Length: 139
Image (cartoon, rainbow, N blue to C red; front, side, top):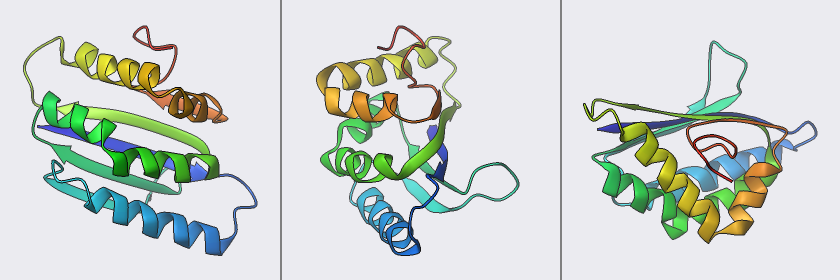
């Protein structure tokens, strides 16, 4: 299993209406991706981030399908322009020591194939994580 986790803060000045709409659309999009076994989107407590989400995926093939699913891409295109600070990370019980590199490769291919998504991610004030440009050879 792979638990794909994100945490984020919104840009200063994002209206309450845009915030509510963005989170509602995020929930709608995450629910439209059938390979996700379990999911949650909501407030992030106990840290420096405002919101977070966790998507549970069975394996790397499902992870790749999730990352490239049209609903996920639309979610990125709508939501990332509202985001100031973003972190993503993955937790897995897969014993293969190469799984982290394989996850990074999924992100690298995604950014290569979808330069608009890569540009949105690169435009964030702060972004760290398993798919961050500049890590694991990701451009």
